[in-house]
Image (cartoon, rainbow, N blue to C red; front, side, top):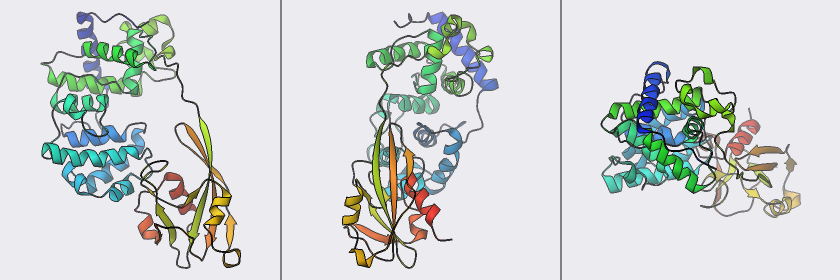
Length: 354
């Protein structure tokens, strides 16, 4: 059962404590903070999805250097975007980001819309990301509900609804909205939004939360129950799977590598990649006749995706050109700038001639 909706007076006190705490203890040094530029806020929100702040910092700076605004990003090519994104993973984010920039230019004249409802019509911008942009940049009274915020709110409210259920998530959205500062306090809305994110990232941790220094511990149902780690409740877990792939690493006499572009759908969609095969037999079929080639099996390794383990088996081919349409020889100074799957980039770097 989910908790009863908070009383409005309690909501005001909760929001004010978050605002006061953020002002004195929250994060304020990150490059996408202290700005009302929706482009920078949007870029950071997309990059931070399932990615740590420490990893995002370098990527954020490089993106701004190459694409300082949404019009520049829209004018760039998908290959350029993938090249700068390479290593961040979840490449659908980069693809949607490029599409989104194009729509902001085409539909809104290069200016991000000012409401969460309109922002959510853009590719790759979900309800929480739209709310973050609208709250930070335009002071709209809308609630975010990313992973950190879900954890804070379910614990404070004692919200026991199963977050695997869309209906329970909608119920939490409703309660999150009631907890927001009043609509006229636009500055407080932005600070509250940052504060509840900061609280989840630095204090209300998934394991061993620092409850004694939490600014809202006196109102926390989970702490009162003595089991904060019980929240949020999520019963449906995606099963992990495994897949074996054979990867052909072909180099010619001058050190170029044989790369193809992946299909628009499926694993590593749209990225440049070494040829990938479902079996060793399929890989062999793409090789020149036995007397004209030299192959070497390299050490296999595992690349971990969110819900799948990829068992990769690299096979080194030297000096001759494999078969296959749509592939080409690519020199090192070029492939290093392309969007490559993380394990392929790692393999190329580890096996590159010194």
